[in-house]
Amino acid sequence: MEPTTISHPSPNPERITLGNTDIQISPLGIGAWAWGDRFYWDYGKDYHRSDIQAAIETSLAAGINFFDTAESYGGGESERIIGEFLVKKNQPVVIATKFFPYPWRIRQASLISALKKSLQRLSLEAVDLYQVHWPFPPRSIETWASALADAVEMGLARAVGVSNYNLNQLRRAHAVLAKRNVLLASNQVEYHLLNRKIEKNGLLDACHEMGISLIAYSPLGQGLLTGKYTPENPLKGVRGRRYGSGLIAKIQPLIRLMTEIGREHEGKTPAQVALNWVIQKGAIPIPGAKNSRQAAENAGALGWALTAEEVARLDEASDQVGKS
Ligand code: NAP
Figure 1 (cartoon, helix red, strand yellow):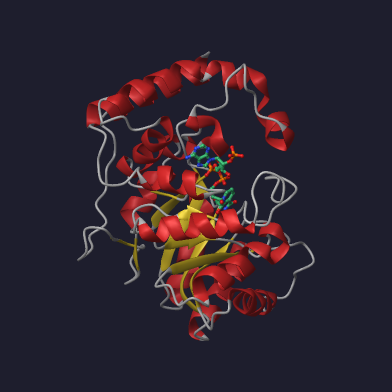
Figure 2: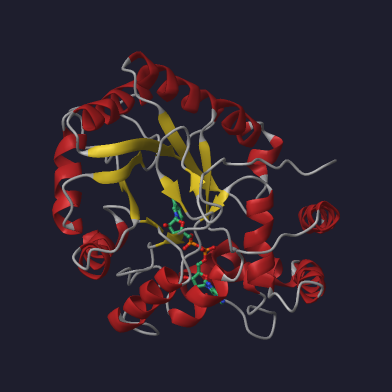
């Protein structure tokens, strides 16, 4: 099957357009979950605030202008770091954050209260993209979609999106927003060579048809697709327990193919191949980076392209992981 590609028309070749908005972003962003998160990512042990500052500076120098965070990341610390190192320094960036529909948030107005707190931490008056993090009950998809429209009408968000929504949920949110004349800009979901559900269940194609940007989270498979984790060097901590050593053994043929294909492109690394693959599928990867080295490597996924034939070979190898 031919890989699906999509162009995001933009006057600047280094930029693509976010959904049907006028917001211009780099074709690859940076995810800020690990910035301040001690529990899952070990912030404070193997990387610190200065490493994050360096990662931000490296990303900016490489032309990356799209940063994704959430109120829940590091208990608000991720937003504070972005406020300190990007917003207060007047960097021309596009910032996305997220509202978490905790079960005790039962009033529609709680989204606006949460957004105002995020804006304080970010030192912003309005955020570029405000997303509902998960479609969790007790309140309906429609309630939070309507609250997103309130955020736009109040001038607190330039654009709005959702995250972890399936096709049905996406259509419901889109319909509520359309009635309020607000466009749904994006859906942020897990997408990478080890998780291609959205290719198979129609969500990716539907986003393309509806002009909604598909933001791909965990595009490096939380580090697995960088090739640095092997049966001899397994993942530790929470991620180690989540993925187990069996998966790391199973993905080694895929990593070997990524290395081989990367060599054909002047020595691109498996991480860069993994991110470029996402871009060729018409999605926007937002890899996390804990330091300048990782940020530089990830930015090196831009400025070149895997061929359709290489994408097809990677698809085939990723299917084999599922079967083995
Ligand atoms: P990811 O981007 O697939 O992996 C990030 C991790 O991989 C890094 O923290 C780092 O961890 C390692 N890494 C990154 N670049 C590397 C490189 N060049 N070489 C070697 N190792 C490298 O996973 P993610 O952080 O889960 O996802 C990215 C972003 O997506 C998040 O920051 C967040 O903004 C977003 N996200 C959203 C949701 C949602 O529900 N909406 C869920 C998850 C993530 P180690 O060095 O420790 O291996």
